[in-house]
Image (tube, rainbow, N blue to C red; front, side, top):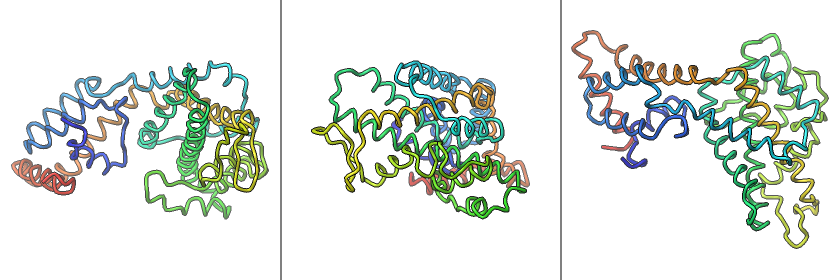
Amino acid sequence: MEEEEAKLIQYILKEFGINPHSILLKQETTHEIERVLRTEQLDELLKFIKTFCDDPEKYINVNGIDHCSELIKNISENVEFQKRKISEDDEKIINFLVENTTLELKDFLDMFGQLYFILQVTDQLEKTKNLSYVLKMSLLMWCFVNLYELILLNIDRRLRSYLQKNSEKNGDNYIKKFLEIARERPKDHATTGLINKVLCEILSLNEENNSIFGKNSKPRIIRNKIAHYNLFYDSEKNKLVSSNFEEYSVEDFLENYYLLSNFLLRSFNMMVANNKFDKDTMIQFFKETFCKWYHYHILNNIQNPKQAREIYQKLVRKLKKGAGTE
């Protein structure tokens, strides 16, 4: 089955707010679920759920996170990465996040596709020797802004969860503003400035701290310039140039690029080392997701067991209409 034809399972995953990368949820799995749903036969669905629960590794690539960790290890061992160390303030932020905050597995899965793609690009960039410098700088600038966005999203979700559980800290105006953000779309997050103010309040940092979020930090400034189309690579000067005539040497840009990368790689390594996202947790999440969907849509609406098949058929037809497959 072609990917564009797997509309029903995509519709359901969207309902749960997750879009797992195929390195975690095998493509064969989405195709099988799609096939089962299109039959409109409840027995087929129950058979699939039982098979999935009995042998989850048939459907989930439990080595996906290990593969991602291996990529991180290979990248981290590169001499250019090892030469750059994160600041004490960054270290303080990472330690706080790992020790005191949690990232919901649903949010992690939603970020994993972007993380894995950036790691693939970074890994290939380090290995490719014959790439023109213009293309290399273009890819590095793309990686830079996406690394920063991924870090912001990760910290936004962690801080929100932490502050909701520690309401005694919510008297600060900036923290109130942070919690009031709607986050209507999956990738919505607080601004860098607001995240910096919240971290300063929690960790007693100065706003002009030396972290990648500090008021005058170079990673923050460079990210904003790239994101707002205000920075380009001038191959004649071999510099990055902005419209207000500010210039950055390639060495300066790379220094901040590796700093960002190290922040993300270090925090991810610590999370995995603490078993936040191990094999059993991931399997349990997918089991609960499928069972939760079944219970919510079918079992909760059944007054008479004989109604189950009829309710399921109506549900699938409603899904087909919503997914545009009718």
